[in-house]
Amino acid sequence: MSIHGWKGRPTMRRSMSRGMSRGTTRGRTAGMLLAFVLTSAMFTVAGDGAAAATVNVNLCAVAGTKTLPGPVTVPIWGFGVPAVPGNCATATAGLPGPVLSVNQGDVVTITVTNALPAGHTLRFEVPGIAFNPGPTDAAPGASVARTFSANAPGTYLYQSAGDAGRQTAMGLAGALLVRPPTAGQAYGSATTAYDVEAVLVLGALDPSFNAAPDTADLHAYNATYWLVNGQPYVAGSPGITATAGQRVLLRYLNAGYDQTSMALLGMHERVVARSARLLGNPMLASAEIIPPGGTEDAIATVPAGAPPSANGFALYNRQLHLTNGSQTTTSPAPATGGGMMIFIHP
Image (cartoon, rainbow, N blue to C red; front, side, top):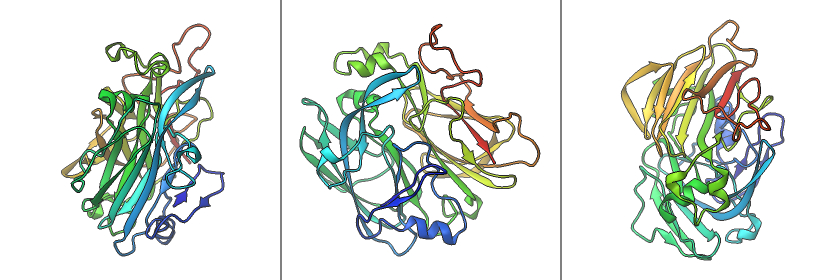
């Protein structure tokens, strides 16, 4: 397993199983940047493009907390990788969960242990992935193993749909990437070649709901924090590093509950796939809508010349979900905006 931090942080590696330490080698030989990571709660379990392998991933669904601007500390439930497989006391809840990266043709088994509070049955699923027959749920304290053949490359959202969606709202979601044999491509087509990869899990958080997930009325859900990879934008937040002429693969995953439109200021993006399916006719867009639970892959080529902002090219929520908190007089939005926003910059 490779754990990739953001720029400037050391990279730690830990062997997990055959086939799980391969992504770094393939990425270096292709001369490309590996999975972009915005926060330490998000890391990569990766493969390297060699022959198909049997891959085993161990996850825990655990309770934790998240500190947001305000500052506000909010309860969350999230997926984490245990330091000792099956021992969820050694796992930390991530918002979102770890990025799982496997190779096309791998036979993958994901074992999830339910360490949520008592009374919550976990239901693990990946829309678009056909699992082998078997149980889908894990009772409190139990584990469930789900196996599939990674036949189709693409971007997938894994999640727990337990408690009628309350578990996803609490943070139980993450990205699963299936990579094709050719390094530096999102899919089998050469038209999906890229130089820089950014995994962007889009989400939202309602502190009132998270404080009482068992009793809160989901019809009254009112998100006040809008997130990219579990973080709302604040001045100085890490961005996507890319220079003029480089092709940036934007892997969008909507882990929220609304139709999310992401706009790219100062350049266009070429939409190449939706729901992990390659489009026959890719299209250029300055903004694109990703439905709840959906994924989308787009490639943006960084233009020459100065960007429209001192921070770079803004990638932001076009519905203006750019808030950090309730926006009272005690928690104003930063001058540069906040919420669901990130910048592409050199």
